[in-house]
Length: 439
Image (cartoon, rainbow, N blue to C red; front, side):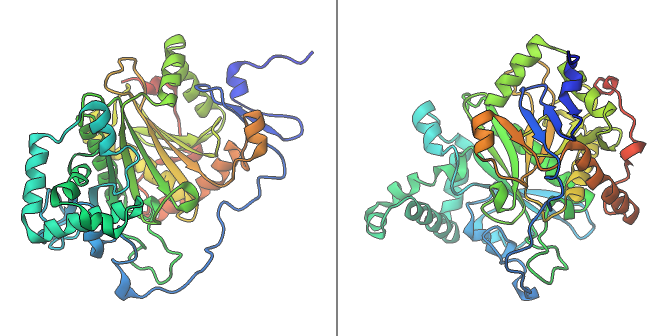
């Protein structure tokens, strides 16, 4: 009779024929990697590689810096001054949008997942006094009024309205569709570059991994502060989903770097399942961390975070865990945020800009008191779920967690040598224990 495996061993085990089976200790998701499927490339060649003109930099898509008026009125932006310092500018009028270049912008999503009307009709949400003032000030200028009206028309046309129906609307009717631009719960954090600054062709997209560590810190910190702000949108907000879709196979509308934050009025299904498991097994995080630390899954580490190959997920990828006691993203110190950002940046850099991926943030909702851990999962979208997965709920990964380590560690060592990532311990240099999950 075969010996029954412990739960830690079931988390990741290689069978005699080479099949690797994984089980997610939080959700129970089962994943297999079968021999012969792990040598597929992580990405496919660009379908239409072509040179780009330097004159077009800043106008490749609606998120680019020369097209600020093609997106809703921004809530704020981060800029760099001539001395290299960073500054945040808030609520710029339309006339001033082009006077500075935003390294990152916080803008409402033109096509929200959870709309302003959802909050208004289901929860009685209305713009705050400050938001009403901001809207009135923005509309008071001809440029601001024209900007908002163009976007209202674009959204209505995309929703199926005709030009005749739009023309028949009064100004007040049209402007009622603009409330979400000033008091909505779906924001984007959009980076400046579409392609890297030195790009000569359309394969050289600017991803998280092509940012400098300094730029990535501000990008990550800005996202954390936006998350905190969206929790104050309405008393009915229970969770703020935070994620990044990179490239179209991962769900991106534009191949232009941006994060998304969406306020919702319920706990995420993943959050509820994690809470249930955590309440019955308070030591589950230690157990997951121990598997990553003892099964040769470590990729990178500094004093504030560790990255290891994820296991038990529908797609292969990298898990980034902040160290120390559980804290939410907006609660960590500047030093901790830099360390966490550096490890996340390294995970993206090692993945490469050509690999479609989702970056997903998991955290403790403010209304929950169970000490859930903030962590970030970088999932490589390199396979398509099909009938086998749908019929069995067993997911097939083309590469196993050890292969993730083998693909990323050598690349990170080269990048560290070249100064493209922050100083950190990599691969076998890493030394972590579950005690590091406590202050």
